[in-house]
Length: 280
Image (cartoon, rainbow, N blue to C red; front, top):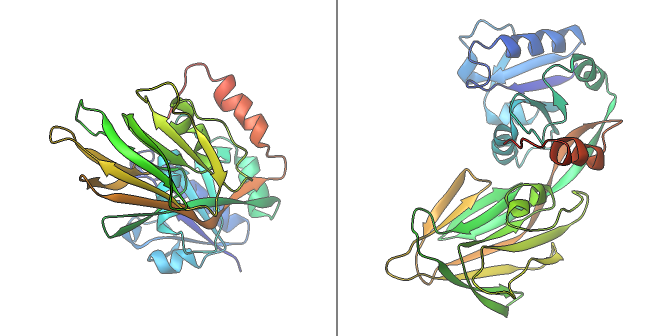
């Protein structure tokens, strides 16, 4: 019997009613639901386990918005289980189905789906290692001072940049912060890195697109009054000081569940071009 892990969201689903409905639907399709151990006293009729056991399931169903899906992608980066995002947020670009699409959820549980492999980033800074599905961003934090840093690709210095920051994005993250900073939109099937300055103080600093096997290094030079911060997928990160280096390269791929009729370009039209009010 297949095991389907469900990752709830206490903010989007405070009374766990949506989680209960998902669990019951999973059981009705002949699969075994499993929830994180933190919900063991919730009264929901499911199996329970830690990260390792959840990661050994046949599918990870994440209830929430893009932020919840990004967090799950990092937590289960070593798992082979594909992730299905059900959108309980606003834009929900990473999610595959909306909260009201019960028919699609049942169809997926019955095996009518594909798995799209999305590349990640390996990020190293200050002795710490991070995994990112969307992007790694070096920015000026709460400081009003611009940052100065040098960009190296495969040990070749490309440019010294004065800007508010720098974004290194995957194709998946090309529709997130990178897009807002003027970067290009990339099909998530590509294996590339997108390097985009944030508000550069010259006319020649533009996005650079390079193969995922290239090694990117950013050497940070900050003034005494400024500060630099590394943020990974908008959630994790660390502070940087003058002389620190941030190394970024292509990482392993994460599987995202897609319906058989799923199209990146249809989603692009529906979520971005037709969604005039934006969202996150």
